[in-house]
Structure formats: structure tokens, C-alpha cells
Length: 112
Image (tube, rainbow, N blue to C red; front, side):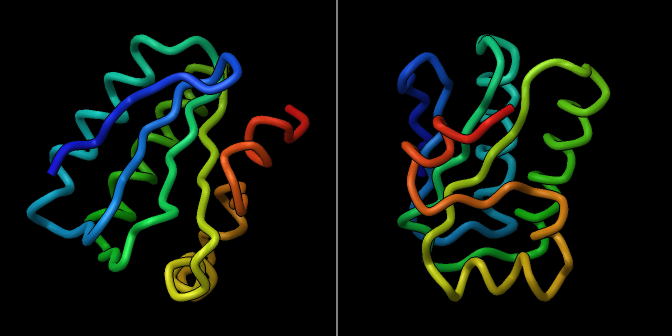
């Protein structure tokens, strides 16, 4: 599985699809790290087509969030329109940590 990195309206977007679990988490971590290293400002992780996400993936996202917070520059935003994936964030309380959006456009247009 690959995690394409692109730019949308000046923001770096990492796209994930399918199942995110212990076997794919290292590649996701690397893609987000690359996006944070090369990007300028906001990194958006697009989870629109994700069908499953486990706790290892949450750990990757939390690590990225902590890195962004420590650097005090930029932000990490998640696009997560699917209710079953959004539910994982609600159950764990991470919906209070990560800004969740329905579309990449919504994530880009959100106020800093």
C-alpha cells in the first residue's frame, strides 16, 4: 500500500485508503513524516476511503500530532467523512484532539 502525497491549495495532503493496521502503519508514518518535513504549514491526512483503522494507526496519528504541536508551526487535520471511522475517534476521545473534516476542501478552508 502506498500513501500518495500531493498539494491542494498550498496544503500538503497524504491520502490513505483501505485498511490501516499494524502492517500498513509504518508506511503511513513515513508518508506523514515526509509530508511534515517537506510541507509548509498544514498537513491534511485524507481518510475518506479508509475502511478499517486500528489502534496502531491512531498511534501514528498521535505521534504526528505531537510532532506538529512541539514544532509550534503548522497543523495536522484529518478528513474523515465515514461514520464508522469517525466513531473510532469519538470512542477514544480523539475527536477532541484532531480537527475532523468531511472533505479536503473543508480542511483547507478551516481557520487556523
